Image 1 (cartoon, helix red, strand yellow):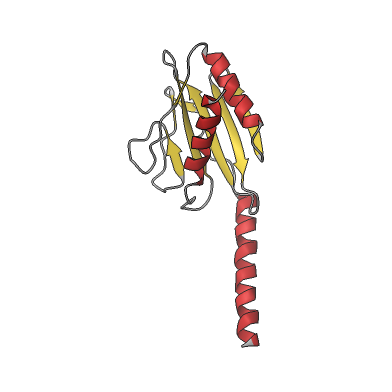
Image 2: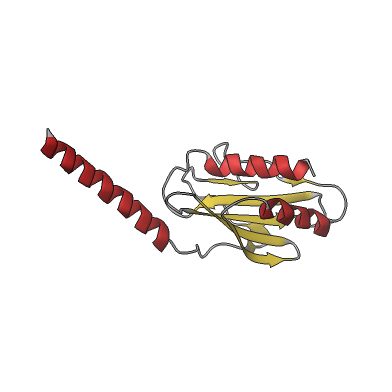
Length: 152
């Protein structure tokens, strides 16, 4: 029984170490940014939500604002600044890219925001860099950002 416990503990420790190494070595995806006036499409895996997606699995509503688009994007930045483990990677007058890191394994999720010209909407895409499922983390985070954005 003791030998079985030691073997299982070793397997679990190896899996945890492998997961941690994977999270540290995942590089920034090449398709990020604005392409033809839009953010990239969501992958087929369920670890992404996007306001441009047409599938129920990935689709989420954009942020809606009134007034000046620059002020709305500044408000998004203010909301993001209150969130832990968040790094601002790129900012343009109509675009933001931030990275969120999970607390234990340090997995990175790339989150992008784009003000849609001529509308009162901010589109976004939130996707995990690694893995297949995110257990709803990206959707929950974006709904929390919506709640904080709307309460300002």
